[in-house]
Amino acid sequence: MASSSFPVSYSSTSISHSHTKSLSTKAHASSDNKKLYVENVNCSSKVTIIGSSLGIGPALSTSLKKSPLLLILPFQRQKEPLKTTSLPTQYCVEEVADHCPDAFIIISNRMLNSIYIYDPKKLFGLMTPETELARAFVAERFVLYVEDVHVPVIGGHCSLTALPLFSKTTPHVILYKDDIILWTSEITYSINNSSEYLDYFAGNPDREFFEARGAERFVLSLLRALGGANDMFQCCFVESNMFEDIPFFGSTVKLGKKGVEAIN
Image (cartoon, rainbow, N blue to C red; front, side):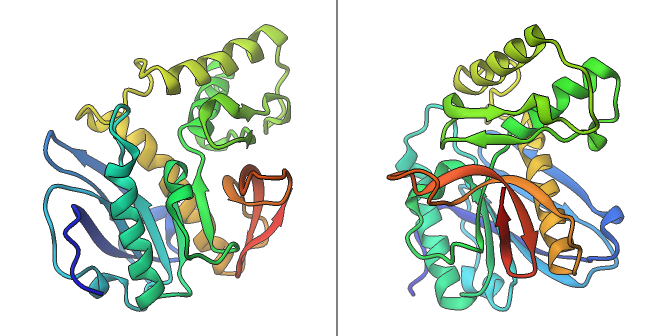
């Protein structure tokens, strides 16, 4: 395939199944360049990370060859036309099909409908920021360490139809109906109205880090599953026959060595 004229940036890193504690994620942003960098040591598994940028690097195929896992973060601005980021994403996935057809692909849920070549067990749509916001609300309310909190999120392709299941929060907490209603509306409002929580890509690294942190969390879970862990669960969009005419649905997914092991 010919070199791309699309604005694509990427980086490769290696992440160890047994040294995940050493991983740190940094999202660097400016008005003209947005990338996600993952840095760590004691590495054994290669991961290619792709984001949008105004700069064009060397042939994408160089980074993709023999890469078992791809993380694609188009970083779409709230009012930016979908085609602006869907075209580069299509190109990246076509390159994946050519150079590493067996790779696992983790992608922003906004781009799922632009993907036509994929293995349904190896394509995952990120459900951040919904999962990260739900986790943050519970952790703050009950003074818990945010990394220890899990709130399942299910639902449709956009945040208006995504539903956090606060009643199934772990660790178990006693929630009031008013809290659940407030947090659910806050998540929906925040994501769809560019509020202070998620005015995504206005050049604020902290807000981009919010999305990157959820992506990192998913990558680490999948790597652990590929390494043999049998208790890795993540909320994500996957191909599902749960509803007619809805090809992807957000569910709690058990991850395994082949990708999607079970959909709960």
